Amino acid sequence: MIMSQQQAMIAQPITFYGAGAMAEAIVRGLIGRSVVNAGSLTMLNRSNSGRLEELKHRYNVKTNNDPAETAEILRESPIIVLAIKPKDAANVLRKLGPLLSDNTLIVSVIAGLTIRTIQDLLGRKQPVARTMPNTSSSIGLGATGVSFSKEINDQDRQTVMTLFQAVGTVTVVDEDKLEILTGISGSGPAYIYYMMEAMMAAGIRGGLTPQQCKELTVQTVLGAARMVQQTGEEPAALRAKVTSPNGSTQAALETLDKGDFFETVIAAVNRCAERSREMGAALKEGIS
Image (cartoon, rainbow, N blue to C red; front, side, top):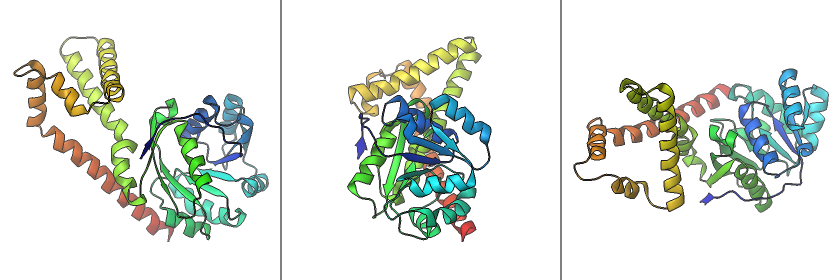
C-alpha cells in the first residue's frame, strides 16, 4: 500500500532521540509542511551541544542533552523517534524502557533493529513502528518503508504515516519485507547516482564539458522519473516508445543486455537485502 503525501497536523509533542542527518530531514519536512509546530519538537543527543545549538537556531526547535532533563523529557513524551546509531541502541533502549508509559509511541529509524529486539531491550511490549527512510527525505522526496507492531492502534498508525508523508511517500509492509524494500528504496538512490556517474563519464570522454554532462544527465534522470510518475505508464511501456527498431536507443539497450544489466540490478537489490539481514543478525547477536 503506497500512500501519497497529504497535509495534516500532529498536535502532540514529538521527541527525537538523536540529532543526525535523518532526524534533521524529518524535522525539516514536518516544519516545512506545517505538520507540527516547531515548538512541539524536541531534539536530544548525548554530547554534541554544538550540533543541538545549530538545530535550535535553524528550526526553532527545543534541544537538550542534560541527562537529568533528558530523562524527564522522555518520560513525558507521547511520541519518541529513535534516530540513534545501531551501536548505541542497546544502551539507550535499556535506559529508556523504565521511563515509558504503556501508550508511548516508539518510532524507530535504526537500521537493522527488529521490532522484537526493540521491545526486548525496552523490557516491555511497547507500540513500535519500524521505518526505513532514504536520503531523499532531506528534500521531501523520500520513500519510506514502515512496519507496525501489533500494539499499534489506529491513531498511532495515522501519526506515523503523517510523520513520513511529510518527507515523501510511505509504503506499509510486513516486517520480513523491509530488507527487500531496503534493497530497492533504502539504498536505491546510490544505484541511480552510480548510473549517473557512468553517463557523465561517457559524455566527458566524448568531448562534452563536465558541466554539460551533469546538466544533461540530471535532467534526463529527473525527466524519466517524472514521466513514469505523471503518465502512470509502466517503465517498460515508456522504454518501448523511445526505442525505434534498429535505432540508436535499441543499440544502446542491447549493449546493456550484453552486460546482463537487468539481472545485475536484480542481483544488486537482492544482495543489498541479504546484507541488511546479515547486519541485523549481527546487531542482534552483539546485543544479546
